[in-house]
Image (cartoon, rainbow, N blue to C red; front, top):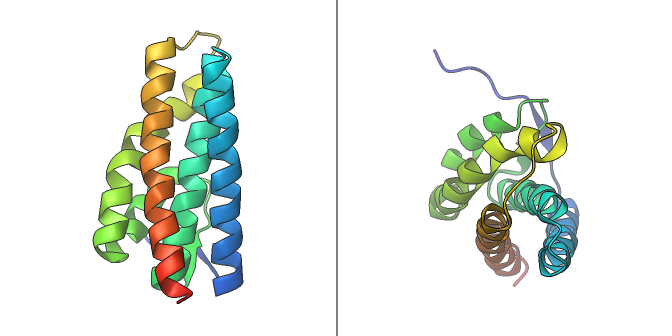
Length: 136
């Protein structure tokens, strides 16, 4: 039996707010990458993708994952149609880096940070598309 995903309801307005947060985190991650601050770029990219996932789930399902385990959002993204599945591919690449970027003492290579920002860029682009299609 699959584990139950804790969720919170998301209004259309809140979905737009999650997209705005995703956009801000993405812009900051790009700035940090340009400044060659790989740890900050990676962490911000991960947060951009998480907020993009919340925006997509909010629009497609009217709810987002609310538990402490970010991996659980994958279950919701699978329910969110083709866009959710597409975003999930990049988010699943990013989530394993979260602990290393935010808590471990190890450095993150600039090449890894660059890939993280690229993945976040894809996630945010999907969220933009989903949110804009819902507000037409």
